[in-house]
Amino acid sequence: MTIINSVATWLMKKRIHQIELFMKYPNEVQDEWFNQLINNAQDTEWGRKHHYRSINTLADFKQHVPLQNYDTLKPYIERMLKGEQNVLWPSEIRWFAKSSGTTSDRSKFIPVSEEALEECHFKGGKDMLTIYCNNRPDALLFTGKSLTLGGSHQIGQLNTDISFGDLSAVIMKNLPLWAEFYRTPDLTIALLENFEEKIEKMAHATKNVNVTCISGVPTWNLLLFKRLLEITGKNNLLEIWPNLELYFHGAVNFTPYREQFKKLIPKDDMYYLETYNASEGFFGIQDREEPGDMLLMLDYGIFYEFLPLERLNDENPETLTLDEVELDKNYALIISTNAGLWRYMIGDTVKFTSLNPYRIQITGRTRHYINAFGEEVIIDNAERALAEACRQTEAVIRDYTAAPIYFTDSKCGGHEWIIEFERKPDEFERFIDLLDETLRKVNSDYDAKRFKDMALRRPQVHAVPENTFVKWMKLRGKLGGQHKVPRLANNREYVDSILSMINQKDLTVC
Image (cartoon, rainbow, N blue to C red; front, top):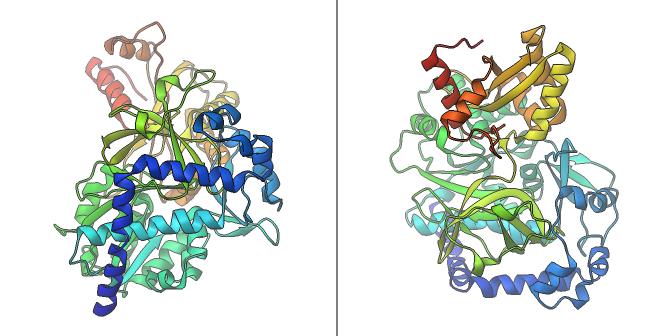
């Protein structure tokens, strides 16, 4: 295995030269991909409709193709789900990544082409290893196995030709043989739909395996780790996997989890590497050991545009290319991809921490949201759930905000709501249950994480006194005008601030 490790790390490092090329010539690489994408799609239905044969410049592209989102592409995707081909992309689309819903859909289905798998997702996976091996020349990663804990969605069939699933499941189902050899557990366990059963079987299947690398969303990984310690009686993961050296993480902010991971993996040189991978594409990899930003990957079959956040609501907003962006400004991410997403606004916002090379940080979403555990609760979800809870309990809400409750050693995460009622519900506990139940109905990711309280527990709701939000906004210097109460936040800044104000004034909170 040591010889194999040496050969594998040598092969991985050969890719570094190509990465250095796009770091040195970013605009040229992006121009090449722009032309290739346009040329490949010119005879698709979308390409004919938007006159791709007459597109010679980016200005032409912007003129012919307006900005898109899932709702605008949904009619095309629905036809593709039924098996129609050459709609958005010329090659056959047989796979769709099932992701969290938009404002109108409980779930969305993102097309995954063969090119997207090979040139984007698989390439990103290999580059994660490449960058790590380049940063750690003494790495022994390939002397053991990589444990990947994916999502809870099993592969499903819409018809005999079309399959869908969580992106991690789609990737695992299509992995090349060499990659499958180095991962654990086998697919019969990794692709289990029942997440509780999967955690149990993964813990038993991997407790005696030489695991050197872990990847996955921190929320899920913590559940697996705690179960492993329970069944083995060990104190930490190094007593189970003494050669563990690397953890790939993404999807949610790692900061709230960092201390818990340090306790579970008490190793000074444990390497944590952040990635930016979504159903729509693979975008960034942390290329330096110090956390904080990620290298924007420019040769994955994706052409990038960036919309300044202050222009988000303009009627015809003007996007920027890489050579036009500035440091420390928030941009909505716009992508055109080798799976047929055209000028697609994925909903994430980023800022650049470096322009040579281009490195980014994820700063949030284009809308208020809570995504501390991968649940992606947006305002539309919250409004619908609150409306239903109010309807059934005859309550009237004046103002509200909500934030995550982070994991502790003894409790799973949750959401904490602060609500000021005009008229309180006739049954307060029933109101909370209805809020929770409706959120589960309208948001599939929230529902998955609420399953048996494994990742999210029942919401905690505070009913606060009259004028609480007015007093809080006044304290912040944001009373009146166009200032609004922030409805959802992915951190506890607002919730803790309000609770602190209430406690200082000795007001009643229930």
